[in-house]
Length: 439
Length: 98
Image 1 (cartoon, chains in turn blue, green):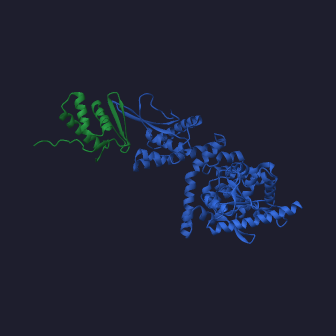
Image 2 (cartoon, chains in turn orange, purple):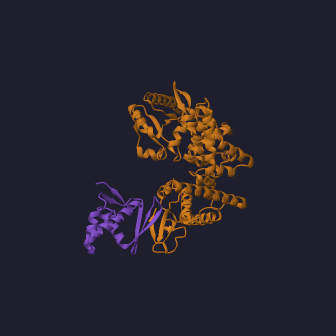
Image 3 (tube, one colour):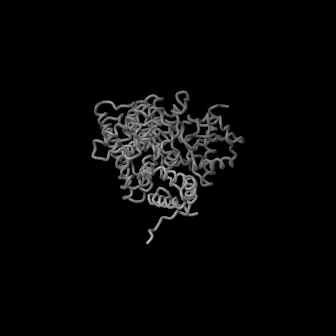
């Protein structure tokens, strides 16, 4: 038998299994997105029949996995070699199901390949953008073009330079997809914290690095270092752009499309006033997170900012961050007590143990906070310094402990300082202030 | 006319979780984290507070102090009642109904 005919027959069968699974899921009130298969074949290969596929790739919401599994089991599927499959399919983002009777295979995804993207964002974002495609007579929800474009790059990055099909998919996407769609794909990748994987995928194919430059994607290492740090990837992209492009990037960041706002800020739907308010809220959010984002980017780039202008900008950003933290701490102390103030200032509450680098970074920040508060017309007593430093460390994921010490007796006095990993990073007052409390 | 005297609390005496304290030699320093106020107790008052925390019972604490210090129990009860009143007013102890 001609192998090409066999592959074509298998592809037709896969479409039938896709339709069957989607129909059953829909009947049970469950949603699924078709990830690849016919969506890639028809889009990038036309009607050539050149791109065949052997299984069904569907994505479901992470919290609907159990229900989906039950429905697949009801269709006669069983989980195929769970442990081995996890390694084969790539970690933990999908699991393989198969049906003995006819050899049908379904890869059940609850995340995209190649990274631990936030599941709480992946499904709602991709589902909100989804389109409909007819597959074997069934209306099937599939990724829209920008999401599909991103997936192609993530898939290639995930399998690396040794697996031919994902690379060929990506090569064709580079040829056929316009830059504006790639730009939308970058926006989605940014939301999914998938910029490093997108950039890594583009590095694998001819023309990819040039496209990455046009998209203002910095080096993979820089993106990796800024991943999961609010706004830092955005600054990394600004750093890779030309001055004119920077303006456009900033405009896009502050004023994304209406559809994007409706997805990102659900309460913005329904009226023009709500939408305007959502844009105002977004601008305010960006303004308050710009300083730490900038600093995170600077740290990710390898420590000290480069050049006198960058160093000056970093200083200004840090002073602004200290001023904001000071205002927060004073307001909280006026409204509530010390334990609750600390609780609010430690919003991220890092649980990891402190590292050696945290100690030196904390001590450096402590000195800066002391100097800045001493020069500003502010309360620069030890407790407020400690509270401001608590906020700054928390933003950087550094765990800290506030220590209160007292000097008993007639010459009574109290003093506070912060410790990281059991070591003081502010003046602990020598032995004059034995510790009373650790918070 | 006789001056009104403090009475021993009748419920269970506890130290709120927002109060931290430590003994430094003969002195005990307390910090009420809610009010932000520091307070000092002498050795006897600090000892009474320790006993109060252990037993939760003011009358039993007075009996124990009287026994150990060879002081008339009525005198101890008066002093302890006054101490409890002041600690209560500053949020350094609380009384739970039994």
